[in-house]
Image (cartoon, rainbow, N blue to C red; front, side):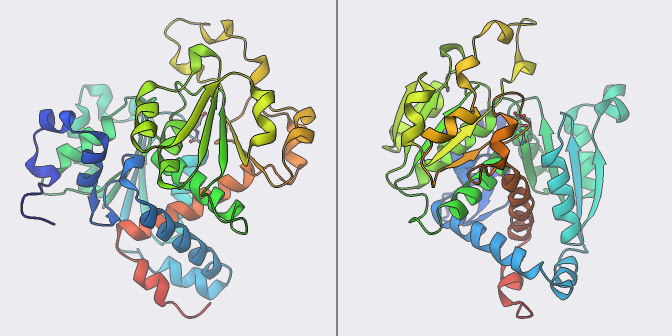
Length: 360
Ligand code: NCD
């Protein structure tokens, strides 16, 4: 680290707000290793590649009992706090399973109605309390930027433990983007990788935090073309498009889904995020009928393309599509667990232990 480079603890909260996403991202890593995991911008191409290799190595090791026993011994001295104040099925379960695979203990708060926040305790005091019981805090919140704020708060305490965002408001979902990249890496393994591929995002791109994180991560690859297909009211934010322009990445914004299907290497479907509606029933007034993937679309999709979805789905992918070999959304769920194991290993500097394991 250069002598002029400051750490998170040396920056005021106001100053932090004025930094660009890329400047902020540097403060959350320890060199080329993630410490906090708060935004997609923290991950360079080499970091994405290393994480993917680590996840693949871990899943190979996990195939045998001896390998599982080895993994279970790695982080027995660490406890993870799972603080999920927003609904979650897959992200919670995959982090929980990842902790178990590594032998970590877990403690959890899933409902602030059962914690002292109900008695008026501030989130800052809650997080300081959590940090007393854990070596990492994995948190999901409806408040965008809260995880970042908590990382900053802890950086000035005697227990500056890492914070991993498991979904931050409408803004970012960095670990979902990591598992999506891993799924794309594996899907295009024999086709030259992610470079040069065309990725089509469909649905609620305005409020879909997984899309916002993944669209940025795709700028780490050469020659990727991104299509954002949505009704005008649900189109991707200008801030993400600005990041794409800055990275000289090709993209198109449109609403003709049928037209782009034949050009796709991956189609990333999303549900309408109506929990964010400012007025009840507001999303229901938007015509989303042309933004679903039906069995009839399969014939138009290239034979090697993949269909993805962060899940949960509603009607935007017909159930009949599940049987098609190009549907990889159930594989994404499993990949998410392995990527989160790899991420925890990276945070706790255990990648070399995994590489050195020679029993598998
Ligand atoms: C996503 C989320 O929470 O943002 N779910 C997930 O973590 N896989 C997507 C969604 O809820 O639509």
